[in-house]
Image 1 (cartoon, rainbow over the protein chains, first blue to last red):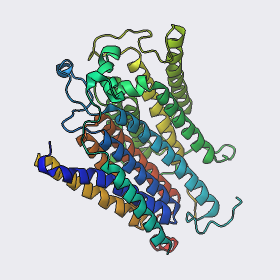
Image 2: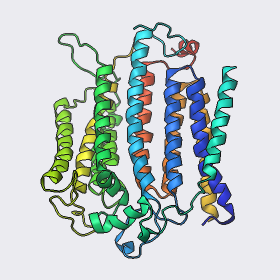
Image 3: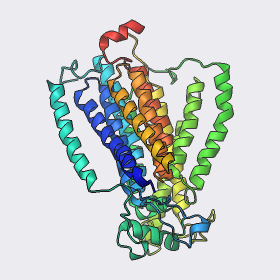
Image 4: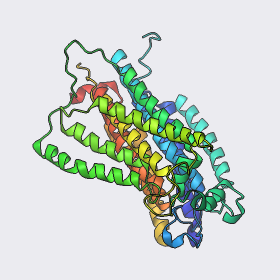
Length: 124
Length: 242
Length: 90
């Protein structure tokens, strides 16, 4: 489908998903502010979702929805399983982010700071 | 120093990720011949229309083939809402009115959001009623409706959200989902048996696909109620005054 | 199909750029808006990869709701990553 430019498309889709995963992990490992850590987790989430959908893509395939005109002709369709998994993962990702942010708010109210290098006491 | 260590680790992770991606060429046909049913994707693509008469294969997988998974997912959302409420729980003084801590918006925002809200709700309902025919479904429609409620919550400082009604909608939708599953067991099939009561109907009709549209409508109401609950809890926190 | 090649490469560059911006930026409000931009580009990319269901979910949940709960959290905590910067604005 993409002719000579197959490599460019492969690089851009796979490359951006790998880059998002690595950037997010860097944020989680290095940053000291709790909000930055949650942002990093959310970026990793996006990268993994993109990776799943890209793996399920088939060149020249259509979306896995049967309209009346194509129901008998059985056209080439992309893999529906990764799409269903990613659908679940996005909603769960929202729930995880919401709970993480509520913990951030709670920690901030208690310690009056959101930087993990300044939260020293183990006991609340 | 720590930074360089992290970058070194990330380079290792990235190297192996690239090695792994080299084994999966982009766009190659990994489903195989649909008639062979050699992969699970081919099985779903071949059998969804004859067995469930649902046009959207992703909906059939999410609600029916992996319906138990979706039941668990909805439970996770419910637990997230409950956990959010208990983490951010704040003792109210006696007689203290519950209010959202926002500034009053201008008249333009108020009128505009009141004008837009019915249309957003209509779009959400359309998306989850047609979940088995077109892209979309309960999760998407519920999120769109929650966006409409968000608009109202931001625009009106004292917008009353019936907490009783939210809880009722959520519980009824959850009971509908689980009840349909158990109904399949009662009538002699499996949990979440598809052709339990309304019958399959013709493909691409609005009323078709057995219990799939009913479950997706229930999921839509449940997701809308839960996400609105999350937004309401987060918007009524009192910020620190320092 | 040169059109798709150009679109894919532009979207990939934008994705990586906004990801880097979200992590590097010290002002958390800008970083959060940048994660919203990531979700928006990602939903276009899902659509081009023939996944309209996922694109709709990402557009509704990732762009709108996640960004909003991040912004609400910033309102309840601090806006800047460095504690010293917080005193400048107020």
